[in-house]
Image 1 (cartoon, rainbow, N blue to C red):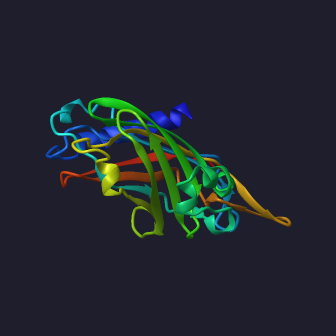
Image 2 (cartoon, helix red, strand yellow):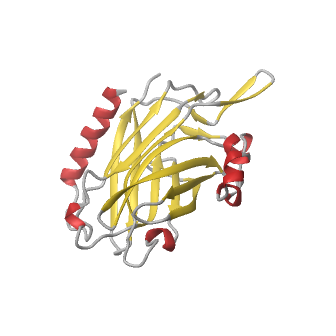
Amino acid sequence: MRRIALTAMVAFVALAVAAPSAFAVNSILKFEASVVGKAGTKKKPLAVGLKVRPFYDTLAPDADAPFAWTEATVMLPKELVFNSKLFPKCTAAQAATPAGRSGACKKAEIGKVNAKGFALGLVEPLVVGMYNGSVNNTVLLYLSGDTPVIIDHVVVGTLKKVTGKYGWELNFKVPTDLQQPAPGAWATVLDFRTEVKAKYYTKGKKKTPYVGLTGCPGTLNFGFSTKNSDGSTHLVELTSPCRK
């Protein structure tokens, strides 16, 4: 896994050097991504985990003009398949309550998140729950924090199939009151380390993966983009190795 992460970061650096630097937001967005597990075939995809991490080493270049994401989109390889409709689900309303998170959403949990935000000049640890949404191909993120600002939100991500370089896009639209949870306090994601676990739905002798990998062409394409509160956009793209 260290080799995968290193290769991904090398690819990122190469793209960052080639990319134009005229962004309104000056902090450097970084991105790591990989699959965990071996590839199957189109007829029999094997379950894999996903690791995705957008982050900033520092937000110091924008200390005088803080910003927030208004949208965030994860671009995923075309070799992946998703079968969320077969797995336990929870609603956004359930994810917003302690009872719902310990009940239906506990069964619908799809992975772990280790996250930090930044507001009012301070780093804020975030508690994040990640769940399979009640609407097919949706992911729910419950975000909670209390210092320096109160954060208590559910953000809905929508997964859709696309054509071209990638096969899938998972898009999150950030609510305006999460972008700025207190007057003058822009809430910026500093680090969002996400891991989706490999799992199967079993019925009789048939096993269907939550996330399946249908093949390994050598490397897989990943990307991450943001739309920012000042109107600017950022995009990071990389390739990551896979295993047959």
